[in-house]
Length: 162
Image (cartoon, rainbow, N blue to C red; front, side, top):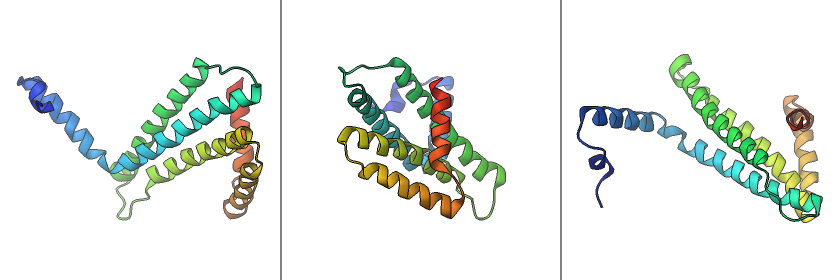
């Protein structure tokens, strides 16, 4: 098999572009686990969301391109958000002890996806244990941080459905 680098040609432009590409890959390499986790959470929520929609409607499977595009937008904005928070933390603030802003951003997005998965899992399985977990997590989150995650996400979902 021919190595990738030899397939791009030997022109100066090709070498320059491949150098920029590999520099970007190396610069963002610390984010690989955040990218993977974000993609996993979004993919699982998408699949269970489509499945739960089928269960809720009680009809044949119906795939909506609107929901797919919302997932694509969420994925792209999530990945870009990780990069932007990483840049802010490492290149702009340059603190001796980094804040790990990209980790917090990813945790929040993945937490929202987990929240949605719990609702989908309850609808699919018919078991309320998943909604019980949501209530427990919501109560603890509000007690520990003052954030009302349940209502904030509900308000956002209501706005995006319009």
